Length: 410
Ligand code: SF4
Image (cartoon, rainbow, N blue to C red; front, side):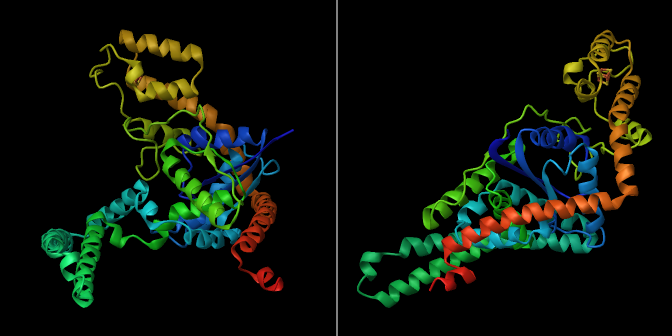
C-alpha cells in the first residue's frame, strides 16, 4: 500500500546528468517510486528561460529522459514525461501569476543570481571597445540612480500633505513626480543587478515551479536545500489561491533526504554542469580519469610523502560514495602516512566510479539503440500526467469562474 501523498520533481535538460544529480536526486526518485505515487518530468519549459540552442534542445530533452531511465527509474512505476507535453503547466502558471505578489518574486535570490550571471556572461563575451562601452553604461546608470536619490530626498522633504491639502492639484503633481523618480531609480537599479536584461520567463520561473508541483497536488518534493526559497513561494501561492478561491491545493514540503551534498571537482562549490566541475554519469573511464586529474585535493600534500588529511579532501569524500569500506580505510591510512600519491588515489577512484557507472552506460546504450522504448514511456507518462493535470485544471477553472463550464452554469 503506497503512501497517499504524491511526489513531484523535475530535472533540467541541460546536457550531461552528472554524478551529483544521480546521487543527490535520481537515486531518491527511484527509491520513492516504491513507496509513493511519483510524477517526474524533464523541465524543458524551464530550460527556455535562459539562452539556449533550439536545435540541441530536443536531443538534450531526450537524453535527459533516457539517462534517468538508465539510472534505474522505471517508467512503469511513475509518471515520467516532458513538461512541455502537458500544456496545463503553463496555463496554471498564468493563473498563479494573478495571485503571486511581485514583491515575493523580487526576493528570489536565484533569479538575482541568474540575472547577474547572464549579464556577466554578456559582458565577458563583448570584446575591447564594446565591453568598455557596456561598463560605462553600467556606471552611468548607477551614478544616475544616485543623483535621482538626492532629488528624491529633496522632493520628499518638500512634500507637506498638510500645507497642500487645500490644493489637490499641487499635491497630486508632487506625488506623481516622486512616484516617477522612484520608478526611474528602480529601473536603473535593475540595470545594475542585470535584471533589466533578464526575461519575464526567468523572473516567473518560481511560479512555473509552483504550477509544476501543484498541478499534481503533490505535497512532497525531493529537492535540495537551495530550492527551499522556491518551495516557500509555492506554499505562499497555494495559500493565497486557497484563501481567495477555496481549498484546492495542498502545502508542499521538501523531502529532506540523507542525500549527500556532492561537491564539484574544484572541491569548493556544488557539482554543476555550468561550473564545469562535474563527472557525467555516462562518462567513459578515460574521461573520468582526465576529469579527476586536475581535481582539488588536500592542499597540505605538496609532495607524495607529505602526510595528508583525507577528511578535508573531496577525492576522499567521493571514495566514500563509490569505493567499499575496506578500500576507504586503506586509503585513509595510506594518505595519513604519506604512502599513497594523489595521482594513484585518483586512479583508484576513477576505477571505482567506472565500475559503478558501467551498468548505467550499458542501459543508456541499449535505450539509445531502441529509442521507441523511451518514446513509448514518455507517451504513457504524458497520458497519466495529462489526466491528473486535467482533473486539477477543471477544479481550478471552476474555482476561478473561467473556462466553458463556468458559462454552462449560467
Ligand atoms: S591521497 Fe587521496 S585522500 Fe589523500 S589527499 Fe590525495 S587524493 Fe586526497
